[in-house]
Image (cartoon, rainbow, N blue to C red; front, side, top):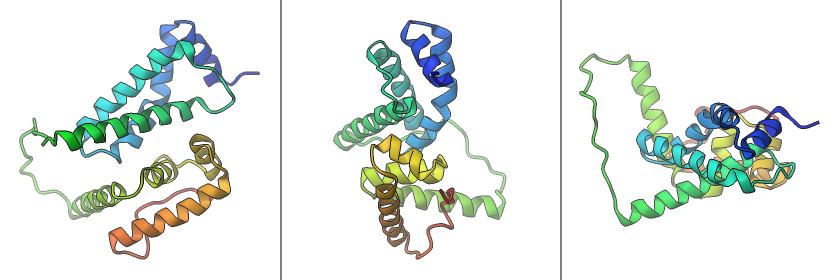
Amino acid sequence: MASPIDQLVERARQGDIEAVAALYETFAQAIYRYILYRVPTAADAEDLTAEVFLRMVEGLPTFNLTGAPFEAWLYRIAAARIVDFRRRVTRRPQTELSDALPDRTPLPEEQVLQTREVTALRAALQQLPDEYQTLLVLRFIENKSHKEVAEIMGKSASAIRTAQHRALKQLAALLGSEKVRHYLRGRND
């Protein structure tokens, strides 16, 4: 019997707008978070997320259910959009202008420290190879298991564990820390 997601995909392939909306609702936040940690600004992440779902809609008529998770296809589309974005940005560097006025209210110390840690983590993460970025975001931001990451990336779970170890070591070196798990907490599976 087909999974609920497979059933939604099949309905969406046949032009059911409600099924397309349900797929968007199901996967939009995860895809957005995946992209957010790999691009400079939230506005860029929003734009790229919209592109991913536009590509999804365009590709649905020719999409075939192969047994691989549907979300793996979405992550591949997102990864391609990120690569294209980086190519565009390196050709034409841009600076984001803020629409909001600065808030003059002092922030609690804890929030400031967390913001600094996240900023440092994002900067370090973006220095890693794309494969390591994908792996770490899926494992620790999206809290996916080794098996789920392996399915999405088309590798074995043992290869994902090995790559994760190497990626965390590189990330720790970039952060100047021996303990990266302080920043990234994932499931032990």
